[in-house]
Amino acid sequence: MITEEDLAQQFATIVEHTHPSAWEVIRHCYVKVNNPQFQYLHPSYFHKRYVTVYCPDKLMSAVLTQKNLLREVAQYLGLVEVACLNATNLVRDPMSQLKHTHPQLWLDLLWILSTKHES
Image (cartoon, one colour):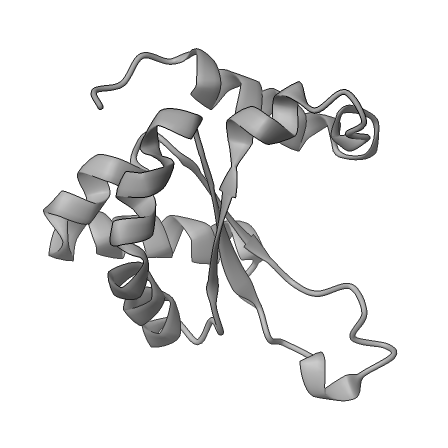
């Protein structure tokens, strides 16, 4: 079975090799494939995985301009959608429980926010 991590890696590889301009934008982001956890309530959601691109605040608009292209790559891999989230806001939100509920994701987001990138 293909894991979410494998799909995220395949997604990034396809974007890197086929769409260099989109790759220049998302290479500074954290890409994750998610599988909805409410599949037990709605069996129709089973295996409807989607891509989440966590972007630094400065790159959000650039990623959103590439969203249709990213959506095409996601659909090629059998994923249903691409969601773009502002990593800066998620990490800095004082009410966020992300640090406690998903500590690895929180650390990954801190890492992408601390790396230097071109605007």
